[in-house]
Image 1 (tube, rainbow, N blue to C red):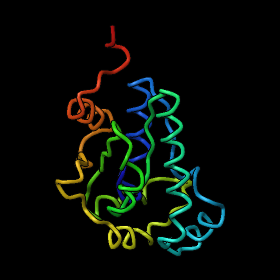
Image 2 (image 1 turned 60 degrees about the vertical axis):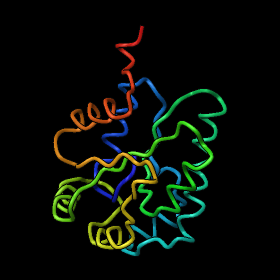
Image 3 (image 1 turned 180 degrees about the vertical axis):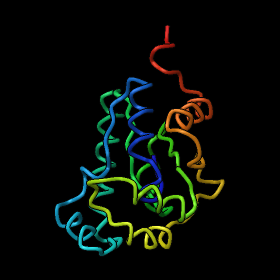
Image 4 (image 1 turned 135 degrees about the horizontal axis):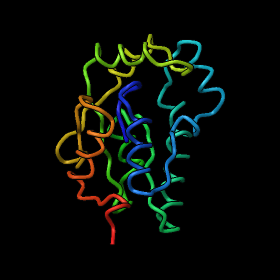
Length: 167
C-alpha cells in the first residue's frame, strides 16, 4: 500500500489484510528512532535516511515470500526507485498507490491524532512523489470513498478473494 502521508495507507492496508487473512505491517515500525525524531521535528527524510527503512521493508516482504505467508505492508514508496527496490525480482508483489490531492490529504492529516508526521511535511511528500508510469504495473486508486470501498476496488482489480469467500 503506497501513497503520501495521510492518504490512508495504514487504514486501507489493515482492512485489506484483515479481509484476506494475511499478515499486515505498518511501514512506520521499520523506521529508525532517528528518522522518526527527524520527521517529528519537522524535517523531511532524505533518500539516505529512507534506504535502511526500505531495505527493512523489503526484508519483511522476502520473509513472507520465503515462508509462503502472504502479507500487506504500507509504505509511502514515493519514488520509482523505492517501488523498484520493494517489488523488482519479487513475482507476485503488487503495489497499490492511494492517490489524492494535497488539500484532501492535508484535511485528513489535521483530523488524525497522535501521529508523529507533521502536516507541514506534506509538501515535501508531494515534491518527492513520482507518480507511477504504466510500465510499473502499479494500481493507482483515488482516496475517495470509505476504506472498505477502497478495499473492494483493490480486491476486484487484483482479482483477490477475501478469506470468508474461499472454499
